[in-house]
Image (cartoon, rainbow, N blue to C red):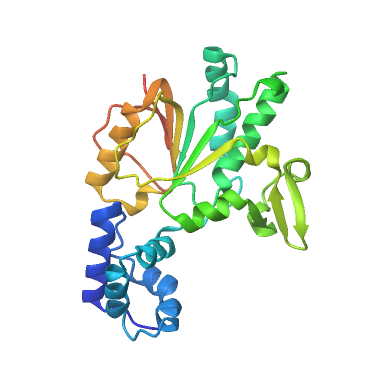
Length: 272
């Protein structure tokens, strides 16, 4: 495998951190694993040569490709499933009390290839069906954003290998997915219709017409340094409705981050 030199790591990681907040300073193995074969296939002998090529591409396509390769995270359906149970049993009843189930503003920030927002949509549909509100579900209940165009394209297509669905209950698999091959399933049009995918850089200002009821930003901030985390968390706070919830990943913590959220339980925070 092509070796990433220390000076190359610094140049690449500094560029990514400055523009996207993602800290790859200690991720040489990740960079080598995700870029090594591709850099060689493009005919470059070093990562530095390839990075200069990407940086000078005036179309921006090659730099976008580099970002896609370095920032897409592995995920799967029902990941950290206790969160979805809390959303169904505690959060959705609160939202329903505000609007009767007519208005749900939920943001899956850093949605990767779509497993999280689709899982969340299934839980919402099941909740509304149990409450006799099936016909009242809004056209779009979830905004799902990511910085990676490649991840978003995959999420929008909604086709998954069976391994990503290993934790999915059989009855939900049959209800919300269409088998497309020996090892692949596609989300139903009805499920797809309830998710809006959008490219978004979490370092940018958040502009929304109405505040969100729920923001999920799980297993994303582990790549950010403390000042970046703090800025993002406070932007989330400002864009949540009073009583709104923030969910972060089980490998993450807001310990040491200055914020105004009220701690509910590990990885769950509330805006009073």
